[in-house]
Structures are given as C-alpha cells and as structure tokens.
Length: 297
Ligand code: SAM
Image 1 (cartoon, rainbow, N blue to C red):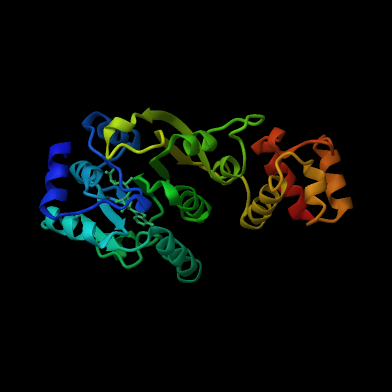
Image 2 (cartoon, protein in one colour):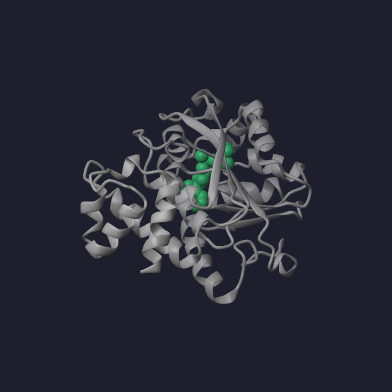
C-alpha cells in the first residue's frame, strides 16, 4: 500500500486522523517487508494483528498465507478494512479496544480453556481449540503498547512469537541489560517468558503522518520452557513491581513492606545479594531464583 493510496482513501472518505489513537500509518514497503520477514510466517499460521489501520501490514500477512484476526478500535477504519478485504476468507475483523478485549479473553480463558484466538473468532474457530501456536504481528498503538504486551506475555497460552513496532524508547526498555537506565519492570515482566531479539529502527518518514517519537521493531520469542511455575510467576511479578517502585532505593528496604524480613534475609543471603543492592543491578536470572525461594516459604 503506497502513501498515495493511503492519502486517497483518507481523502475520499474525508477521514481526519486521531492523534490519541496513534494513527501513524506505515507506508514504506521496505520496512513492511522487514517486519514480515522478522515474523517468520508459514502458510496457515494464526496471527493476531492489533491496530490494522488502513491495512498495509494486514495485506502482507494475508499474502503470506496467514489466518488473521485484526482488532481495530476506530469504527471508521473498520469500515475501510471491510471494503478493502471484502472477499478475504482468512481475515476476521473485530471492532474493539484491544486491551479490553485481551483482558476479557484472559478472564474467560482461565475458566473456559479457550486460546486468545478461539474466542469470538470464526476464522480460527473450533479447529484452533487447544492450539497455542500463534503469533502477534502488529504496528501497535504506542499509548497502549506496553500494557498490551504485558497482558499477552503473562497469558499462560500467549503467542509463540511477537513481532511488534513500537516507540523506540519502549523497545529499548524491553531489550535492556541490567545496570542501565532502560532496564526495569517492562524488561523483566516480558523477559520472564520471552526472549527479545532483532531490534531495528524505523525512521519517522516511513509513517504517515510522521510521528513525533522514534520507532523500532522488535521480536519476542516465547521460551521453550517457562522459567517459573504459575505460583512463583505471580510472586515474581509482585517482587519486580515492588523492587522497582522507587528505583533509587535499596531493594531490601522496599521488599520489607510486603514480605517478612527473615524470609527476605534468607533469600538475599542464599543468592549472595547485598541488602544494599538496588533492583536495577539484579539480573532476570537472580529475580527468578529469588522468586522461587520466596514461593517456597
Ligand atoms: N497497522 C497500521 C499501519 O501499520 O499502518 C496502523 C498502525 S497505527 C500505529 C495504530 C492503529 O491502532 C490505528 O489504526 C489505531 O486506530 C489503532 N488503535 C489505537 N488504539 C487501539 C486499541 N486500544 N485497540 C485497537 N486498535 C487501536
């Protein structure tokens, strides 16, 4: 889809873009193809796309033979997409807020045993029941990118791979190493179940209109084996959020507000973590071991 085609669609429908919905559309063919290559699709793959916009990525996903569920919050864009992809049996369009949708599905999935893509989705339907192998490929709305990724990453049957375009600063936080300014809650919550790789920058001029922030694309692959069971993972989330609640404070002091001092003392000693340490110096591996010890108490 070219920039000219985008402008024509918007003009013919007198569509004014909504800044608060992050409506910056990717028109650069090279960057779109790079995203598709990073997604490593095979024909028949199940793909969730969040925020299809005018459909430049959707079009390429379908050309790869993927079966796509696309969730778009703007009803005006849903109307455009219905027209553009009218005879496309491999595409299901949902008019919804993706974050609300995912939270609703998570609640249903924990009781009803659905995967995220089974729910309300005729394309994937019963054939996909029990199938956890699906991917997220999306140029995400930047304002809700982090909560969407955390929601998916924490889901017990989350995607096997997520290839996402988002604000470069957020992508850097996800891929950060300990003891850097970018390292924090987002790094760890996503790193628990996923390994980030392949970050590349996408220049602002590749979007229409050009966003004010820089963008990047990143791939997250789900770990073959979870590092923690469900109970310890819940403790991990609590520990990480509490340990980073005041970045410059010592982790031990912060955690004391939620766990008995003697349990903490035992775990710090066993893992040779100083009680003067700040959370930003503690690696994912150590947070994992630490959560396992607390889960045993
Ligand atoms: N995928 C398109 C592209 O690459 O050109 C559009 C990407 S644009 C950055 C983000 C899209 O997400 C917009 O179409 C916007 O309307 C939509 N959007 C914003 N908030 C959303 C939400 N909460 N749920 C679903 N879609 C949303």
